[in-house]
Length: 383
Image 1 (cartoon, helix red, strand yellow):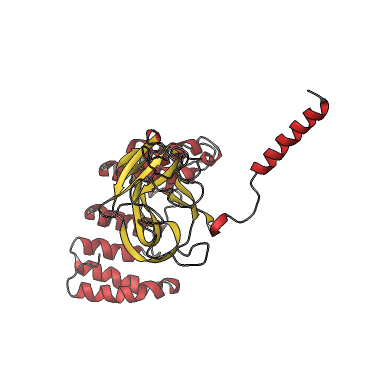
Image 2 (tube, rainbow, N blue to C red):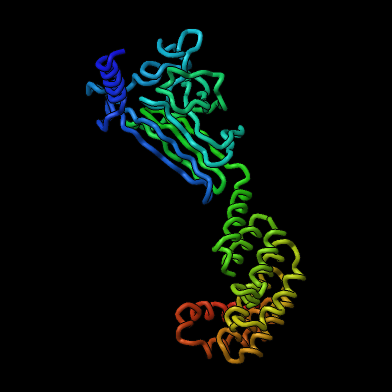
């Protein structure tokens, strides 16, 4: 091949490449590209990327009433291009231009069915009557539904479409958000197609992330171990919670035994149903740094709420002896005696609390104390 022919071949290849490259011009037909992303919990996420057509077509004429069953066929339809034939009809691309995609950061349940983490092409088969079929395809980079192959389906689910107020632009949104799930919905013209997305084992995901973080620089603070222990305890991971609570107390360069760290451990034990052990920890905690009159008073109130009334009075009495005359020790004694039905003693200490109440506490506690005085006079518990 001569040099001139070689040069022409190279130029033609470059021109072909330039022709296929996509310019930064607006999308055809006014179908704007859109992205919506929703987190479930703090770590798991769902991202939907789609092109959004409007009911008013490119010629400026409304197609209202002509979307479902006409512009978007019901069921599966042969599109006459690619793999879409009468023998292999296609669902709708759930948007315009490229196929809509949906990406999950973690394994999920779609309408109760398991789907692995990953990015999927999203398709819909509308129905004139009955449920609509939503499809998650392993193919996620095709144009429209022209190359849809049912062999690549990762999951199908039937959902009920709902009638809604008119919506000009096709939109994906999240209409319900819970701690472990979110409901996504395709909305266009007069229809909404919702589907529930639930994250599997969201607590395990969070615990794994927290464990990894504590093995790095975030783990160099006792407060982070306390926060981790409180979270683990709240989701029932009691053994792990106790390990993290102990780490906050350990006494190394970032942790130490204080009222706060011991209170965290006591809370973990209490949530695990180990009340006696929790009380033993707090018996030590109220003698440690940070155990001021207000903190001990708060602990006493927790004991009343846990129906540990005798122990609560004991704690209030310790507080009054250790922090004599300080607010709110007398108020604590009033609550302790009231919890045990000794309203005469409770009234005595509540009067003292009123007389010795500091100005900065009066605005909040003054009206409440007046109400509680009346309760005690009428033989009613103030707790």
